[in-house]
Length: 267
Image (cartoon, rainbow, N blue to C red; front, top):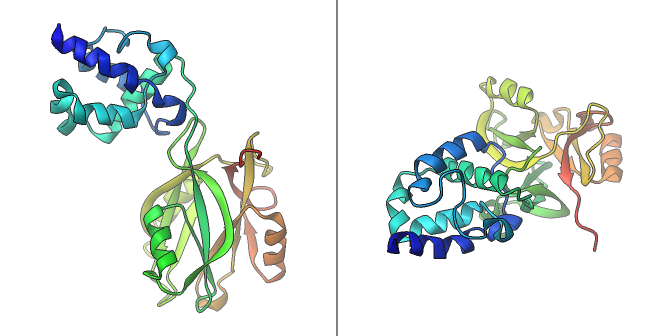
């Protein structure tokens, strides 16, 4: 009983954060339920109740589940056996079990320009942004353009594949796609290295429109100018039109919409 009471005192705090933390897009709710019933239900109620008054507390924040694994003595043995995927699946199950709608976390994708290469590059990875800003990656400057992306997966969002190529000499190049089929095609190209899924977006409709609460991200291709491919992503329709007058080719759905970014909240 003391073991159970200590866990129950911790769990209400564990349940608070889902309102600001989204489970991963690939989270498997059924697997999360199975994990919960085989592992967590040893101390908590089978069927999904991890503590008193869970519905009014919220449920399923992956970050706090991870915190519990580190700080609750009875749970610490699980820290080395549960993977990040396990934690995401558990969180997704708890969110569904208690009918909690998560608010997806977003990050800012910042655009840079390399004058010598005449190349554009965008990243939402904090470490890369720091190194680009402090000159560790030399030659890159912010353009002032940026757009929001999902920092973690959310319902209805798709991961964005990022590729890197050094097949063009000093002018290395990156390529982004939210299309699963396009991602698989580029993976099969030996000139490109798959770097991973770097952020999440919503895919556009076939006519290039975006779901409510989202804005179009245009992708433009430099058509190999400068003897190296380069793509630019922008949410600025005026900038898209300007780039086309310079010989850049729109790619994507409709007028060249390749993904849909979460629209900024109104001020």
